[in-house]
Image (cartoon, rainbow, N blue to C red):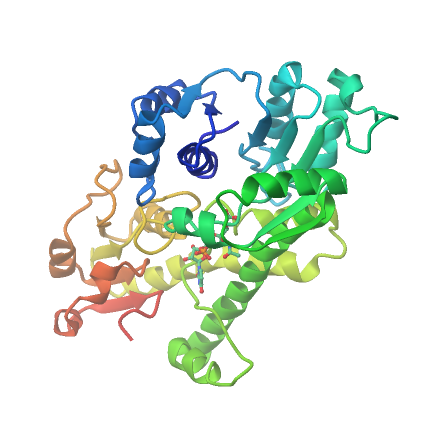
Length: 405
Ligand code: SAJ
């Protein structure tokens, strides 16, 4: 259920291991594209895997669920679109809808797995929904040690850009609604996963996933806070971090223009929502990282004021290096804000994206460098690392990633 960045690689991986897989999605374009052996999202080598899965006859895509032995839910878990943007509440309505849509097809002995990153208690909620719609499937059978239905949470942990490798090599956490469910899910994952499979209960698995992304967010926030302090006192933050990291027990991450993507900027809020009074550090880290784009825009404004109608070149729009993904991208947000502030002419280079933007022209790296008075480096794409320093001599450079030293 769900043929996005997690569902589609998982479905095609299982299909190439010999399982008969029906991938279900509400997006008819995605279903049609996949049934032609093609993909609707960008991820290295996924096109080859999907092609081979579809051509083998083991993977078909459909708008409707059907009877199966195993159901894997890999649907989005975004925020609720509430008025007050400072309060972020998880929206599990897609999990709810997916559970309701499979309920009529469920049979005794089936396994239901939730892969979506979810607030603590969501797997139990799946059981409650099934109890409401199919009460016979949650009543223990007095003549059997096995539950009538197996339900587990196996959070996805793959890194966009490396999904296929990490799907196979990463360790997996499986949290069962009971022990039998965790063991049943392990049998499935061990057919394609080379990493260790670690069993626990569903609530611990849910929180483990949220904690992994929050750990990274808190550590990036530390680096981003250092970048503000260093700018204030006139010290190169990247040199500082590389020196401090020579200590055997220090490993500071890299500052940047903010934290983007659909995971790290979202998941910590699920913990804050569950324990608002207690998750003080986690909330502050979110606030520190969310403030960074605004800080970069202010820097650009301060430099632009010294020019009359400057050309401002923004390098990179995606949320991180060498991908085309724009979701929650601080680089895109900064570029849009610079454009909105009417500081001068904005030109952009994004080597991974061919689509046009209405607000600003997207040009080649050389064109952008040549005409810009101010260069704002926002993403550490490989192409930008190759730029000859001599070309930057006459420019005002705002390097948010420490690429040019
Ligand atoms: N970033 C920094 N400094 C750093 C590292 C990252 O500013 O030192 C920024 C990036 O530029 C980007 C953002 O953080 O804007 C997130 O990038 P990322 O590469 O750290 O992570 P994602 O969002 O691509 O994937 C994360 C991964 N989680 C962890 O590494 C703990 C991945 O394993 C998860 O599966 C994924 O979230 C997910 O789907 O939850």
